[in-house]
Amino acid sequence: MKINSIDKGRAFDFGKTAAFYAVYRDIYPRELYDRLRALGVGAGGTAWLDLGTGTGVLPKNLYNANTDITGVDISAEQIAFAKREADESGRNINYFVSPAESTGLPDNSFDVITAAQCFWYFGRDKMQSEIKRMLRPGGKFIKIFMNWDFEDKIAAESISLVEQFNPGWNSGRNADADMYDDIFPGRQTESFYADISFDRESWHGRMTACRGTLASMDAETFESWDKAHREFLGTCPETFKVRHIVYISHFTME
Image (tube, rainbow, N blue to C red; front, side):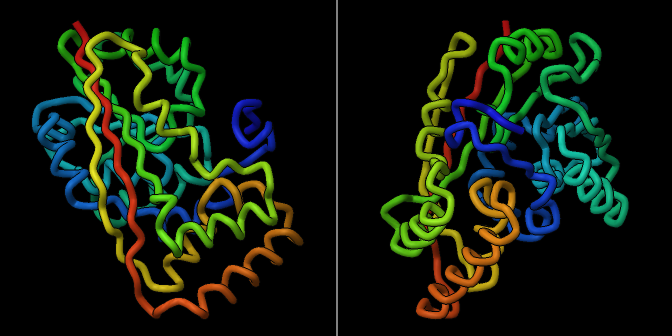
């Protein structure tokens, strides 16, 4: 994937990170899930579509056997991990590979549509019409974004190391603006801070799964970054917390 407005147009492929994403990006705090449930995500008797589902983190953690759940993602590698987890756990979730802008799903078929960590990758105008088309009257569209606090010392040093090897990477500095985009009337946005627990290996895995490293570096550059980041982590405590900020923006269709 290549988007001119992201990372100075440098191509990235989350398919390369699927194995790391499945293990190390399942880090949303419980408070996020509590707030999403309060908005009706995963409620029994409803139909829910998760756009840009990746390895299925949201459907897995908000699973309800009485909810009709669909997850789509453009990455076949990520969907393969989502399907495997659902099959192994016995969760009945319909996952398939598709661009978010053209799923081919029926009109008026969902009570809730979510998009976590991904909406700025989509074509905004196409998504505006697609979401309106697929949502039932009174349905909700919900965007979620969680990013590290740039003032957190460990996060700041890790970001700096990625930028040394991938200078065009913007590390999510502009993505929070998307959470205040009035794509539909009546936007409601809330945010909160969460301290997420890591050890050295899980934080390294989380950084490996980000857009700026394995998804966009060539093999030689990634190897150099991997070594440098592990050396830095050797100076950190065995376990630590990294402060994150979580945004939720939601809209109700008329």
